[in-house]
Length: 281
Image (cartoon, rainbow, N blue to C red; front, side, top):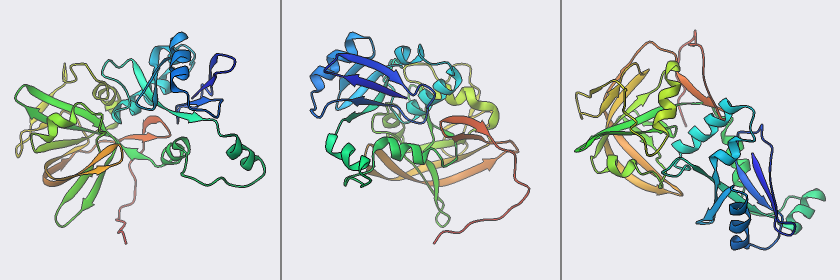
């Protein structure tokens, strides 16, 4: 989805309303007048601008969408990355400032120098299918957790995994102070659970069954595909995310189909009839 802003004509419009792989604001001017941009999108109820990003009103976007299921999946993914505000009312979007010289170069068949655009990067990553997890821990005030797609195996010896929570996450600081967490790998039947834990400002554990893990006490959610109990080893900066490595102290799997995420859509796949492993390097 793309919001087009024309500061000269004072116009704000929404386009590409069936493309849920990316969300951005394109401003048709070579100048970077964030004050003018903020005023224009506020005037139409589309959101605001802060910290060099547009924060678009989810309700404003939603009223122009026909495929609400796909739209909600996009918002859930954004929330899992920390791109939705605490009130779950605005979603973050990159601002594309028009560059006439670069556009002219593209028209002439030459490739302008510079970094890959965020939209292109996000679109490419959307073609890599992943599972979905919920990272949980227990604090003095109760259980906490968040939906996390950025999860990966790291090492077999020692057994290490990594997760990458957004720096804007309000839940991760609560988990990091505990020093341990559980990774709950979601099954195909847990799409709604995935959406619930991707939202901020709600009681995510309301009506959710779980048991304390035997090793670290972190919540193991009922009916998950599998889980790993982990202890934090190291935390590094990685752009707008944290790179967290953790040692696996216990794990367990169940015979369920996985919940998957591909091109902005939650779904599932049938279990493979073949087995094997792929070694790196």
